Image (cartoon, rainbow, N blue to C red; front, top):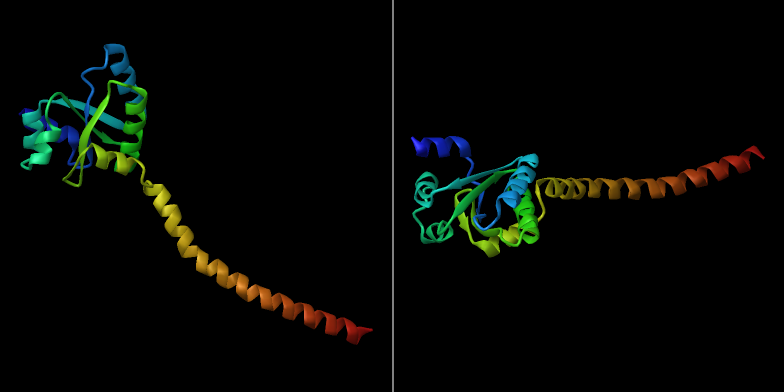
Length: 164
């Protein structure tokens, strides 16, 4: 019953970060949770053995991540935005610790989560790709307009000479 509750809360999401928020005082913890809720990030304190069962954490790396008090964080725009926001909060709150995470079921340690937080997010990647797609067309249009403008200028000057 508890496993189904955790599965229902996670709603099939496999992009998660695992935190240790046990050393935060009550006021700081509440402020942290409210800030995360405003950003669409969900937090759930879980018993490690139950979390490992739900996530299928048979590997040793997952067992290391789920040692000690654990809070699962998920949501946000994408896993990169999630890692950026949690990393930012961890820098502000000295007692909040990032223990690791999972991306599509693949376990990540703390260093990998830090690298993930520094990579471009979904919207940044889309804008980079669209810029690269549009760039050749803009260059082609510029190349075509350059000689055409010169040619149009020559034709206009010849037409002006003939009118005189």
